[in-house]
Length: 286
Image 1: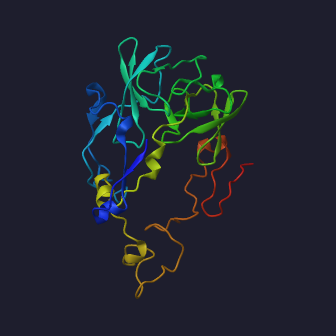
Image 2 (image 1 turned 135 degrees about the vertical axis):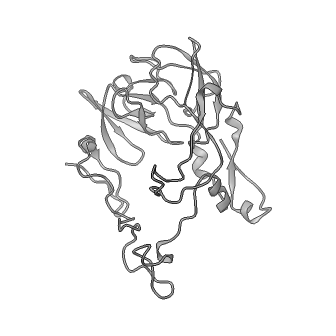
Image 3 (image 1 turned 60 degrees about the vertical axis):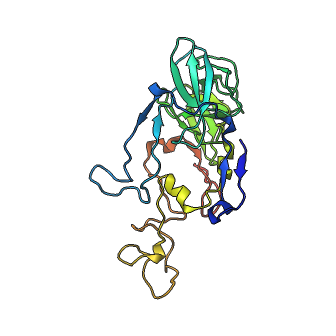
């Protein structure tokens, strides 16, 4: 989907671009698969801010997306491709042969009228079909990958993303993630063949602060511009450099600091960690 650039009729238009929604075939979502969710504004049930710089934004309805793909061996036809305000990729509305309707993440190359299938055994290897990793040939691009069998896809769900099935060893499949991480997953976990569509989303330039506010994002205040009581890098006469490595208001390093729990049970499934932001090198797990 191409990106549309307008003439610089104003300061905000000068450096902004929008997506061409020519791939969207339907404007209104399926009524039975949508519902309204209350915004939290980044606050918990006590009213305390737990996620900073979130507030406002345009009202939107949540679309119920099927990440499990657990309607097996029932052919489905792609009835429409729709815009989803809750994610950066498109969603496809499937009409199953038994009359049920479900949304899925729209893979690249899938169009209205295509027939897709989800199965627990070997089926046709084509973009949009879902099956366990044991039946998917090595070297293919996959997305919406389960980390545990039956729990639903958790990996590679963003626009333009895809992991690669590197190989299989016994009951374990080895996948290479877009971040550079190599991970073990059980071969009973399901995945969808192909790459997530709408890869041009990364080329959109928002252009002005107002468009970011419409997405529910507030301005980010620099630490060096705050007072010492509010941030470790605050204070100082004039424009100070901070005096320490960049960190959060609670002292957690912002560049190169470890964020993963050292005793996370899933650490044993990581073969090669993603590239370090500090050194630009991947870490091999012994």
